[in-house]
Image (cartoon, rainbow, N blue to C red; front, side, top):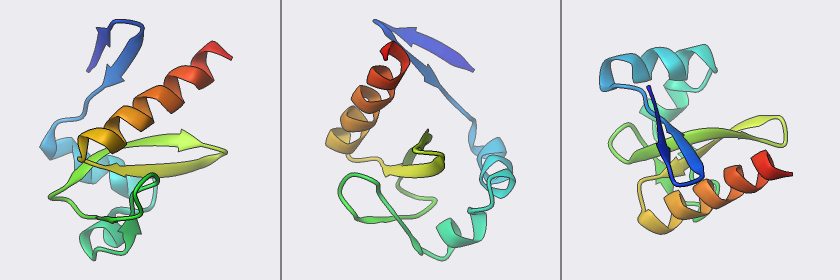
Length: 83
């Protein structure tokens, strides 16, 4: 599902599909085990606090559900689309 908010498009995955998406990109086990970090704050990202994922510099990056980190992810991905 995609939703346009201002100039930023936000893509959403329901909880049931999230595990499938994480498996597809090869990080499901790491997220479940707490071995992944937020791209912005460096905090541990788990299934309980996963705010999103995005591609940056050719790699899938995770972001926690902290509002500051989500904002930074939105800004970073919006800049990339306008460049």
